[in-house]
Length: 150
Image 1 (cartoon, rainbow, N blue to C red):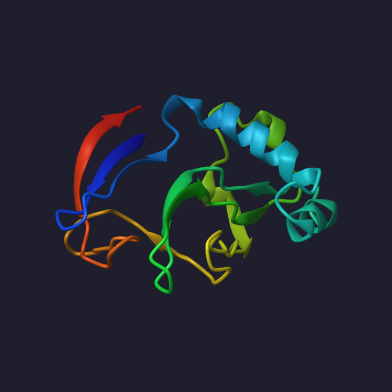
Image 2 (image 1 turned 90 degrees about the horizontal axis):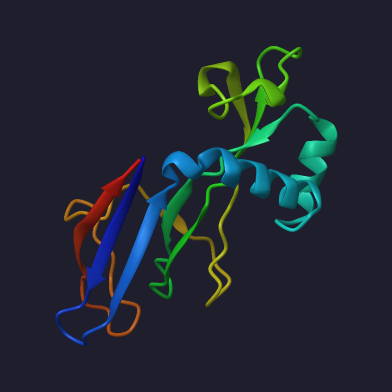
């Protein structure tokens, strides 16, 4: 499933659309992101984890991340790394993506802000209960669901 959000600042006019999730594209995104991680395109650490745990997998779900230092808002793949609880697990058998009940988290991926270089935090839902501030002026952004898809 996926969610689309529209962020708007009533003060300065900043606006941005963000899309979390992958919907029915998850398997394709998972294969692509896994291959990139194994090649080191998402950093040396993920490459090392795949070498250590060849049957491991990443979470390729797109999530929304917010930098509390410079107020940047980004949408990126989670890239948390998991290994199978059962060593005989073959990731090639995952027709609909990995069964998270059969995996254990090895390492959560730290997302680094592209603007200021500091760690970002995941925003679960862009709602009033978890507000984010405008990257331009600092005012609280208004958000609404644009769409839901699967």
